[in-house]
Image (cartoon, rainbow, N blue to C red; front, side):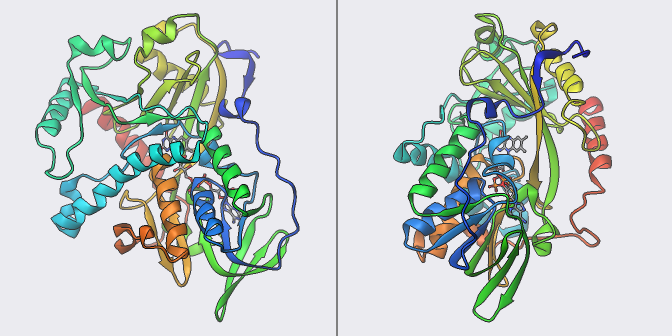
Length: 432
Ligand SMILES: Cc1cc2nc3c(=O)[nH]c(=O)nc-3n(C[C@H](O)[C@H](O)[C@H](O)COP(=O)(O)OP(=O)(O)OC[C@H]3O[C@@H](n4cnc5c(N)ncnc54)[C@H](O)[C@@H]3O)c2cc1C
């Protein structure tokens, strides 16, 4: 390789796939009919399928690619409370009590995922090591301080304020002006988590057909006809679980999800002791900038995995190495000479109100749009959706009451992304 930043064995596929190669599933004939057809085999689709299969409903999961090919085997493996809007924003729109109930779902999801992984005995390096959230300016530090002081009644979380002088216990960097620690946030190996879900779905009786895109869904009286790459199948219930990969087969959902590419690099193995200096407590890390960066140590604590958005338009993950490496070394100058072994990207499903959405439109169930924080949310809302389809009261969630908004002239191509990213970039640079 000619680029000095790329390691000799550089790959433009997810680091996670080294340890968990893409699953090979026995090819099945497309069943003629099923009770539940799930489109998408990521965390959402599999968690829904685990519930419906275990509750005795014939379930077929279809994916256009390999199982878990979307965000679910490509993400950063950071687990948080996840809902983006503040209590103030949500109460302005929906009133105080509904706002509190909505935000509680994020807290519930964070607790639930740890319990679920333990109950299901999924071996995926799940660890509640906490998050360090760095302030990129003094003004942002003051805002974090205020946020801790003024936590909303009924939604209080354990949070520790970390001054700049205490910062080195959290991160081997002078980049931040202090920050906060969320001790309950967690990390996992996303592809191993997906593999665990896949095994549980298969064991529970779910049938999975990969490399089989759904092209069109037709409603026919009391059932649906799915037109796929492998022929047609009828289903009593259909679930759309395609999030950032939602396409033309489901135009109503496509008009409501904004696919945004997120890019990650993995360093080559670092010299012994360096990861302990950079991220001593094994926290996951992000910061107050509008253009998010997220990073962590690999589960074996040999590498740093660093993600963010570095280009206005979508780009090739080989091209994103350099700008991500520059951002990484601004935080950790110790890594200036370190090479990059993996670089990849995937599509995050954003929504216009920055909230995830789950519900039923014209008889078609859906859960999607986790806005970059879907590890806990997609599994949690996927599970709840499967419970609702199975007629279980545990599946109820206040999220089904939200309207899933679109915007005039939006049909799935986010033309407004580049100007928005430029705007955020300017805000980060000048409004500190
Ligand atoms: C680079 C990156 C980093 C991220 N980091 C984090 C993180 O650190 N923490 C966090 O909480 N979240 C993170 N996320 C978000 C998280 O990964 C997603 O929210 C979550 O995986 C969504 O799961 P899902 O099952 O809903 O969708 P996906 O896992 O994206 O699966 C959708 C599937 O639908 C399939 N599909 C689409 N159309 C069709 C069709 N017509 N027919 C059949 N199949 C179809 C696709 O092939 C795909 O496999 C990240 C996402 C990305 C891309």
